Amino acid sequence: MQEAALRAFRAFENFKGEDGKVWLLVIVRNLFYTSISRKPPESAVFDEEIHAPGESSGNPEVLLFRDMETGGEAGYRAARAGVPGGDRAA
Image (cartoon, rainbow, N blue to C red; front, side, top):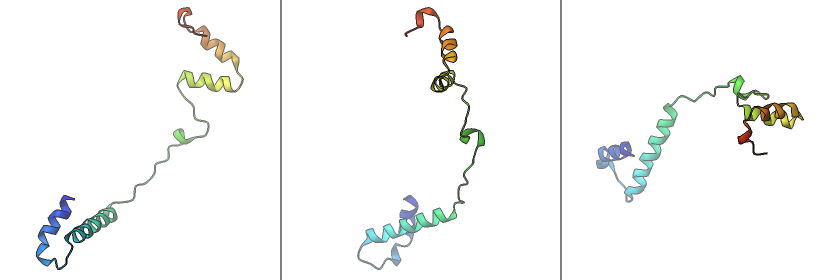
């Protein structure tokens, strides 16, 4: 917006219209179009490890729930055995 105000100030003597607001907004619009045309398009980076369908997780809680969803109760019992006796809620 500051750049638009500066350009409008510099070109004020060339203004030949009735509505200064419209004139200023045209300058803002043109500056916007110029700025986006000069920027190189952003390239998307694809990381195979992040986007793989069978991604692995280092989080033990996530691994436990995945194991429980597939019917593996042995993983649940092993995880529960590792919890100290006073901290068990179930």
